[in-house]
Length: 351
Image (cartoon, rainbow, N blue to C red; front, side, top):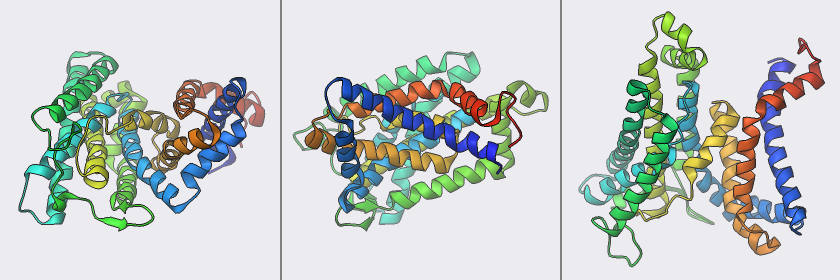
């Protein structure tokens, strides 16, 4: 990798993240808070102890898998904004399998429950995907509607037909055989979901970079007209990327139920599916950068409470940082052009 390629891949994402934190720091100054104290508290809450690190990792896991889901569709040239709804329905599918399927040994029950979550997430993605591929319906509008429908449907299900015996609106506890085994119990619980994310990232990379199907999917995203001209079936890859992304999102929801909560309740996801969107876009589909970005967002969620307690800065500043990052992603062409102009001159140089 030459200097120009390294600059293209590494420097713009770093500038985007730094700029987001910088603007958020200015906002804190304007409203009378010390950004250095706030970020110090945020960092301590995210990585300042063994408990904090494990909490950050746990929060980063569903975010990372959601980013894989968005990245898969993005490589095919489509924007899957419906990941949050697919994650919610995947969690429900896993909860049902975990609660009502009995008599299976633990490894098989876990596998069946996760497959149920993947299937539920993929099925929830199927309708807007078919409408987009077959009828040309606006994918963003239909996916957002499906997100809202999933949230409302979850509320109905955990308050109504699937409500458990707890006072809060939630399902019953899943069977012990469906719970993800722990790698670490203290100072906090870390399950096998952590290495599972790494495995999914490797599979994602291998598929994209080392298979004919992955090459054709990327060709559809880069130039659909040329892809169709050489005989690639664009519609098949568009549908695969969206439904496959839905299945990945379903796995993300499944991990929350099987690994962390062992039941499903209303509002279990604070927006993990939406967190995956800017990470996938800033990483340009690179699964290893998505893993690092997910740790950043997991740290933001894990450390925000400590920032509020220690520095007095409302934890909603994390949402501001994420929003700024999305704005700057939309402007990343300007970042890249500016970097090239400074380092290589107007013609881009040769590195």
